[in-house]
Amino acid sequence: MARTTRLRAGLLLSAGALALSGCINTGALDWDLRQGAGDTSNAALQATAAAPQPDANGIISYPDYQMATARRGETVASMAGRLGMNPEELARTNALRATDPLREGEMLLLPKRVAASPQPAVIGGTGPSAGGGIDITSIATTALDTAAPATKPAAGTSPAASKPISGQPLTHRVARGETAFTIARTYNVSAKALADWNQLGADMGVREGQTLIIPIATGPAPNPEPVPTPPGVGSPTPEPPSAKKPLPDEKTEPTGTKPKGTPPSPDLGAAKSTPSKMAMPASGKIIRGYDPKKNQGIDIAAPAGSPVVAAEAGTVTVISSDTTGKGIVIIRHAGDLLTVYVGVTGMTVKKGDAVKRGQAIGKVAAGDPAFVHFEVRNTSKQSFDPVGYLQ
Image 1 (tube, rainbow, N blue to C red):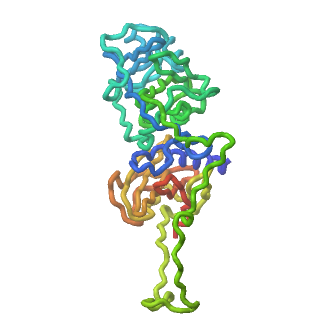
Image 2: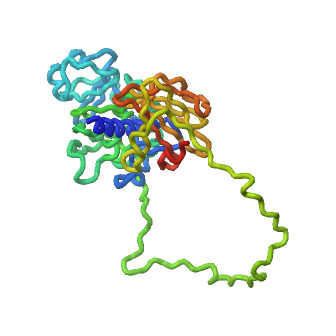
Image 3: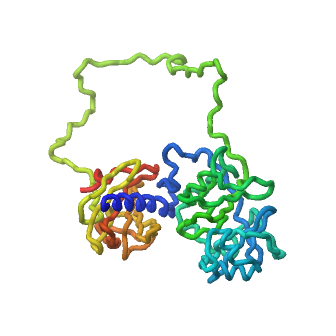
């Protein structure tokens, strides 16, 4: 049982490290988990329209549905009272209870239409929606700003999607197990745009039964595929360089002749050097090894409250936390290397700080067992086995 708990925790923390480290503007990590057979990055090359703006009453109106944004301190019942509708009906439509509290800016699907204010929702506005206050830069979507193609999913996918109507965005009802990132990939839109349009929280959290608006693309995606060769016609063979100009006659010297000006051979034994190794981020035993498909890092068991240190000198680029509340620190080093630390509490550094090798950045968070998840990556979205970098 403990092993199963540990493996599940490792998977969750690894996913959290990838999903919540998007503040780096280098696109170094696989922010929306596009690696593998489900890669849609080539198809997602266009921008989406700006998020719609609610009217003065917090209502976004479309021909076939309306969405309402919650005000600070509202519950489902108090929103229903403000809009003049049945609290139980509003709660049932959104898979909530009438007494459930709402996050400021949270959007609910209305079971019936209400009178709109004189200022209707605007598609393609210039700023974020009113009543929101979303800090998109604090979530893992910076690398997705340029991705947002088609407005509907491929055939046979997403049965929870609404039918397309001219001038109206699609809606999607969240099913069990879906996340904002998997939904964004289903419709080939960026997770940032999905968060903007639906005023999601900083954790990008969605819940089963929630209705989301799918962003509208502003233009067709370019065709990333090369123009195919007509059937029955072979691919053209490039002409070799020698076909245009013959190679010059080669002047050779007898074997063993030492070229003029050759410097004396250095004494390699007198100046041996070893590659620089990183410091162990926590003092403990590795309880889970690197797996490029299942665990793109290692898990180091260490006593809760013991120091977590920077593996190498660098600059702190991300301070965040995963869905369980455990802290995440990402440090960028020379050579475009990144180190990721998940399961950190009591952080002693902040974003932008320069840290030294071995400098404490926080403490090991409590857990059963307590451990730190550690990753090494580069700016090409590639992970490496951290053991090869550690002493």
